[in-house]
Amino acid sequence: MNQRKIYFYGSLLIAILSALLLLTSQNNKEAFTALTKIALRDVGNKLLLANGDSTSLILPVKKIEQSKYQLTFEKELIIHPDSLVSIVEKSFKKANLSPLYQIEVKQCQDSEVSYSYQKSNALIQDIIPCSGRIIPKKCYSIEVQFLNVKTNTTQYYWIGLLIVSLISSFVFFPKKKKTKQLDSTNERFIPLGKFQFYPEESKLLLSSNEISLSKKEVELLTLFVENPNKIIKREELSKKVWEDHGVFVGRSLDTYISKLRKKLNGDESIKLTNVHGIGYVLEVKET
Image (cartoon, rainbow, N blue to C red):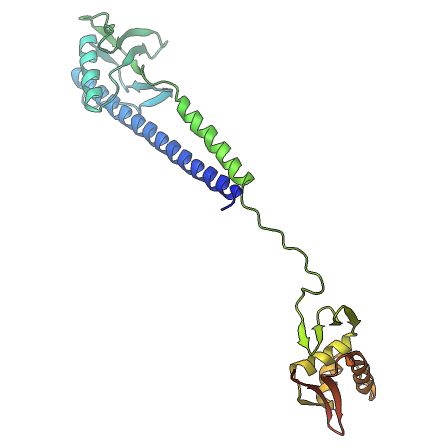
């Protein structure tokens, strides 16, 4: 395997691996989003039940930014901060979501933050104000921002690697070797004694001597070569060579046979013979 092929297959392999990793990353992000929406709907349901409301709707959970989601309600509700903290923590834990997040309760009318708190890791104290107070009945939205989800720079790395790998694959794609144009000695020919007969090129080749043939001479010689040492009737020769190409003149066949004889006289092992009253035969002696 040459170096170009090694580069090509190497680049192609890297491109495939990059694509798989990107796909895995995307699937993980989609799974995280789906779980978050389920957990927030569970939060919304428990908050409504705490308000004695089992009929109003929880509106569709929206992803509003990277790792930030919004929960909204059909009707107004009262929010108890202590209850909200507990409900969110339990719902997120059950969905196996990150324990590091920030919650904001916003008023629907002006998006002012009525209440917010932050859950951190064990080394940092949670920030949970307004414990024990009640947030009055209004229209609220609840937004959650996950704090440990960083911008996925690795994803951009794999995207860049995928692009570079694909470009490299095209650059190093194994090129077919250019077929050299065949010269007259390498073209397809029919052996005829010492001659090489090139019907497509309308010529005979004897050693380095090239003998040109007319179209009719090629057609006649082809018939003889296909039927060596066999008598071909004049009528058959005339019909196949002249009948479909115009009016046949009586002595045309004899004239072309005579021309062929002269062009073939360079090899004594082949002879174009007249069979009186019948036709002609190409005699080819075995060597």
